[in-house]
Image 1 (tube, rainbow, N blue to C red):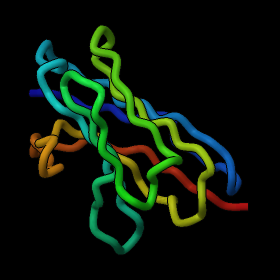
Image 2 (image 1 turned 135 degrees about the horizontal axis):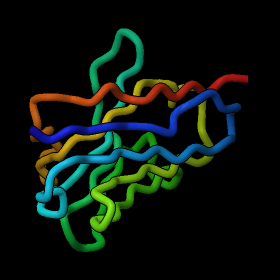
Image 3 (image 1 turned 180 degrees about the vertical axis):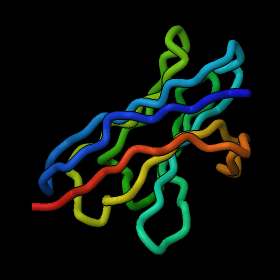
Length: 121
């Protein structure tokens, strides 16, 4: 069973930056597209960004386009999310998962514990 371990969250002031990491287990990481999702209190879990297993095309939600950058290191089985110019509305628990790159639908039933991002002054 693939494990997903998110880290890097924290409290940051508006306009600040954070870099999230998602470490995965298993030797098949490089074959999966990966996505980041976030869930704010009382809201649904939303797709934030996606990266294919190979290639340079990346996809972002309109709300984070130009501020967030998704990347991956297949040698470390890790996917990253660089978040800049953070806003209070970015506050949420952030999760990663393997995903269908076209639809953004998560591939694994089990999720990691997520990492809390709080943007507040």
